[in-house]
Image (cartoon, rainbow, N blue to C red; front, side, top):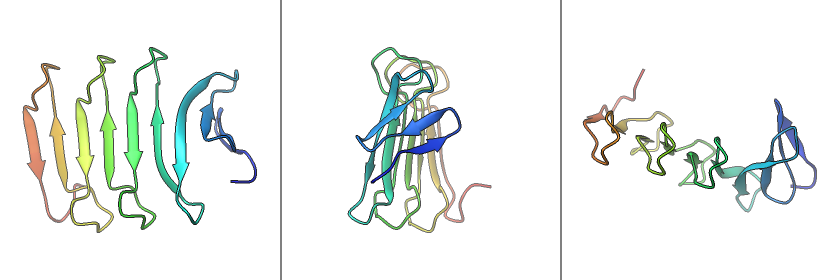
Length: 113
């Protein structure tokens, strides 16, 4: 990436970091060999642990994986995966009580609406 890109109050700098408007680093990103966004990870609450991750695991331009730490405990409570690479998330796991096990697990081969 030859130039910085702005997304709202954040900016994706050429150094691979995502910066807040105040200049603090909120996350990182990676590009594939063609310059397309491959993955991002952010520390939304600034506690030093990753809170969100999205990734294009098959390099086709759509994100196949998303993980969110909804309560800032360092573990992903919400996971979404596009298992058949059709561009729709079709598997999900949610840890509703943050005990480290997923109480809700769903799969829909047609994708979630």
